[in-house]
Image 1 (tube, rainbow, N blue to C red):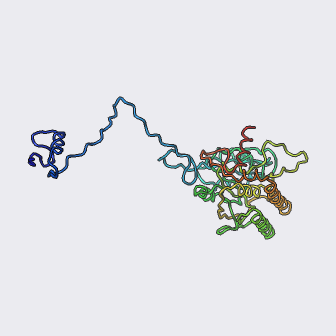
Image 2: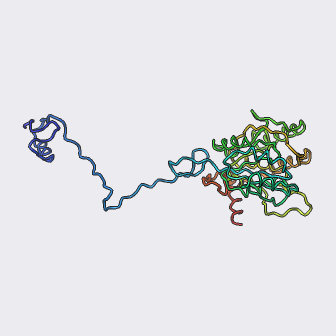
Image 3: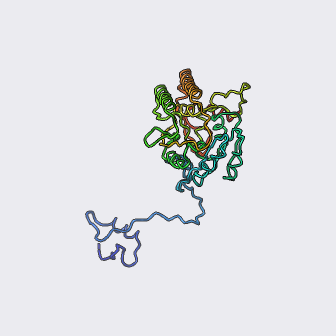
Length: 358
């Protein structure tokens, strides 16, 4: 075999084809090795864009849940900030609203003001300060019914509940929302955790709060540091887990509040959220003094309602049948769509299904 037949790149001189080189190698005597570089490998054919045969496109599954805050976005797209709704229950708080509304963070999705029948110009002041405010009239009386009415009117991804008397600092809303984005489903404000403080609570109320807090942590195996504080933030899909009294129920003829319509609402929410398997994280918060007016909170009357709420919720938990208890403890998938109807465990799913089908 004449090695000089091959050029420097391994091609056969004289214009021979690659097939001829293959035949030449196959016809070489055994043990004979050709010198020079090996012939180039055949490359895969390149598919042209204008080919007539239709090709199957690769289908990419949509992203159903984000890494932390679980808001649905297309794959590869930058994650948008959550839409934040702020619920503000009011009853004759016209003088306090300028301070509260003036301290709200910018770029909120909506502010839902729930009025409990104010006799001053609370609603007019709210609309003058913030023309885009959503005004809701609560269906009964009490803070619990006001919150339930406000939650039902929210359209954002996350809900923050604050007071209208200036005791809760609206500037802390950003910190609460960041806690949700960081992986929590319920950001619970705490005045007694590390970094928290209260300028408003009396020694008697503090002792009562610590006692009630101890009872809840013992009965429900929780680790709350502040049971009765009303500054919280959560994803809107958590609302059905709270199972609050329906806003469509009629008020009692005797004028008394329905169970869950009073100040016990904060304890009720905290217990049901913890029992429902929701991821709770406390956020240090500073409670300030009320700016104007007097509080509607009665230490002994409302403290007794809170204690009754704790015992009632514990009895409710124990009274569940074993089969129902297993169903309640079964984890169900997390809804990734903002504003989903439910989230949590099986019991909340059934409650949401009944409410939706009604």
